[in-house]
Length: 302
Image (cartoon, rainbow, N blue to C red; front, side):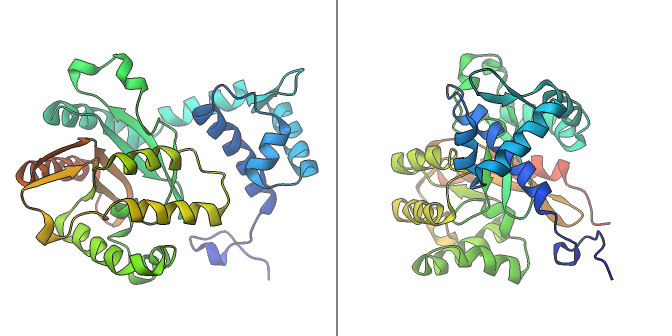
């Protein structure tokens, strides 16, 4: 009996060729975002994806024929007009992003800081979809100097993306925690409980933490063992989130993230970016406003 398409990934017949083609497109997209000055070659794509040169060459050639990629006389591979046209149509039909834009704009004005929408790509990653800016900064050059540009892919790995995990069941939580170094798991488990009870996650401020987050944004194609080592470094640099008894006096926050639910599951989050220290009451105000904004996007189960 042949496998059929269903909601459970374990019940579906895998399609390795599809995954390889998507990996190639993702590699070119990531390079265009994070390394815009690089002249991406076939060798770069081979290195970024881990695919063989022969497989990569065949996929690139087919995508060039389809207009999804371009390859010039020097061998540089870039996104093609066909892909960009399809992506533009897809963005125009994305109901979540369209609904989020006015909500993000209002939240940015209310808080006086940048905010963004991140959404789940699959079980392994999220992406930054849309930014909202305070009225005073819209169209300013600062919009181009964000740590995580639109289109950035972020792996759902410890210690980050907690608002995507805190409301999951025990098995999903366990798999996420298992990717952390053993000594960090008790703190991460407590942090997930705190996020679920409070309604939002908080990334804490340190200069070292910001630098590592910048580096993580460029690591979508780095081998998993190295990503795990960098994730461990992040945990060493800063305590993860705030537990209830730690939210007093002056506190720091790089970002505050609240979940957007679709059908009872977290499919996206709205993230405010204070990037500052403040009284605990002010952090609570930012968190409450972000939760309220995310609630406007959430849909009920069924």
